[in-house]
Structure formats: structure tokens, C-alpha cells
Image (cartoon, rainbow, N blue to C red; front, top):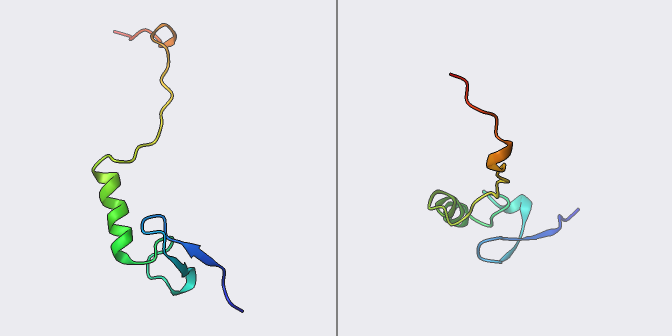
Length: 60
């Protein structure tokens, strides 16, 4: 049974997931590029901030 092809999110190359050493990436190189982007803050996760009026007062 053949597995479905995946597309690498970095280089866009199609590959079989079972053949990759670093899924969901096609190679270790692409995995490291992705990690470098996270560490360099090129990527981020959106955070919903609370309004200042809704934050509880600090206790002394």
C-alpha cells in the first residue's frame, strides 16, 4: 500500500511521509530552516490580550 504524498511546508517539494527522516518536512535541512524561523521570531502564535480594565488589581 502506498502512502499519500505530502508537501514540505518549507520547500514545497512533494514526498512520501514514510520516506522522510523529519516529517512533516522532506528533509532534516527543511526541519532546521523551520526551527530557525521560530527561534528568529519570524513565526509567532497570536495571543489575545485582556483589556486593562478587566485585569484584576494586584494584591500587596
